[in-house]
Picture 1 (cartoon, chains in turn purple, red, green):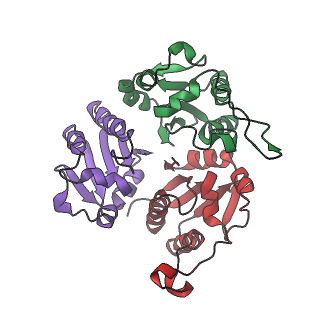
Picture 2 (cartoon, rainbow over the protein chains, first blue to last red):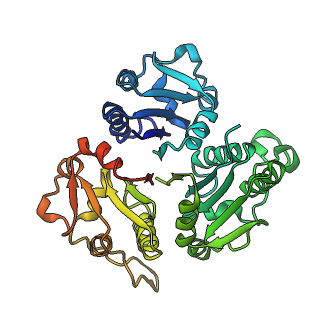
Picture 3 (tube, rainbow over the protein chains, first blue to last red):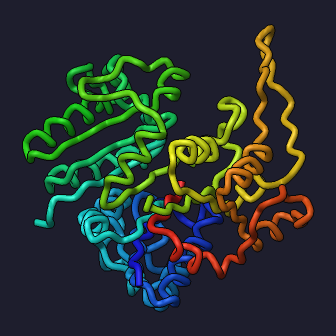
Length: 108
Length: 137
Length: 128
């Protein structure tokens, strides 16, 4: 089974096509693939606990590894203890690790 | 460290318009630091990233002169990426889409940047272990 | 065997008038011409690219008249004619009130739930 790296740079508050991208991540995981959803830039705004982004909790529950770029989190003052359960901070190195591993990589 | 890989990146955004530029360059920098060979295909607005005539300016709002402001210029970042590649023995190929260069009038680019076409993108992608396209919205 | 790549377009009409093309539809044609094994998935607003009869009036400023207004529907149809598989997401088509009969011929439709499986048929997915 292929592995997927889905990078989400946008948030669901400003963009209504982010929800379908989260669903794509969940859908790929349900098909049996290893999937990482890497949030970067404003994409991390959805990862704050209490935000409308409980959407992300559902993605994590579907078996997707949900990571949030630590640079983007710090830039927006979102501390790791304020993240939705199931979302972990990670350096951009995580993206490079997965590109090296040959995961199909998509940027949104 | 992982085995040496060949990676292709496509950038599309013009300078100063979107955070995708900085994230894209951070990824390219990371790839070069790890010693991977990288091809960047700059498409559409991204061909302006390497334009050699970008110039710094002061910032009166913050009371900073030109030197103090030291405003980032994408062309300097790209030059720094070429230096990074030399340090780690990685190959960096930066290809500007030629037609995109022409229509934007940004033919003067920093050293190392080449002019190319979609065929070069395909050739690079075929020769690469992986590719990441960072499109404009 | 050339790598098989699925190009995904979601954002639409961003710069089509001044470029006289959609840049990703255009580059798909160019790479196909260079021997690439590329195919296309239109989702979100980009499903509208497959609607027949898009007629952009030329944009004119003073004496500068545009002579080649974009014809994105023709560009999509000609990709189909070049044996590029062009898919549209059915749910996105329906949400936008587009009738199936309004789409250029040769388009394949796929439900949103089928995208994950479609991705599996390609070596790489380039999401623009």
